[in-house]
Image (cartoon, rainbow, N blue to C red; front, side, top):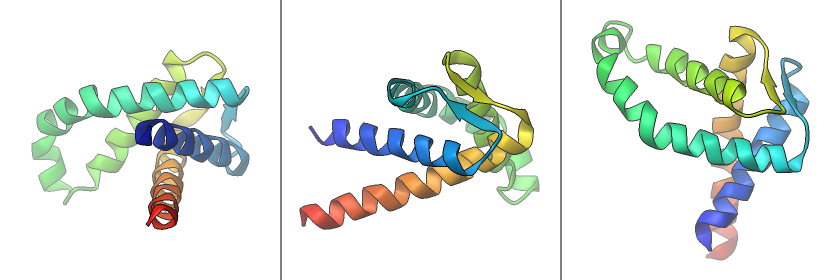
Length: 115
């Protein structure tokens, strides 16, 4: 049950980011849930492999390359999910950061309410 709540909170984070950032467009609530699912799968399966493969670049850039990697995976989600459009690197970069922050805040609030 907890993973469903986290999934819906992540979908809400995607919707909020789409309202704030003009380069991101979400066609509806169902699309936002699908984006949350695909983004979760990508972050679970593909991201650890890419982080490992780009470890030398991340060390040289003191970890800042991880932001570029997150933006690329966010843009990949935009390519894979119909109805979710991410325009440009700036939109993907800002979107990945904003979705992460909003999701972190919403999950923290939810955990605080359950305690």
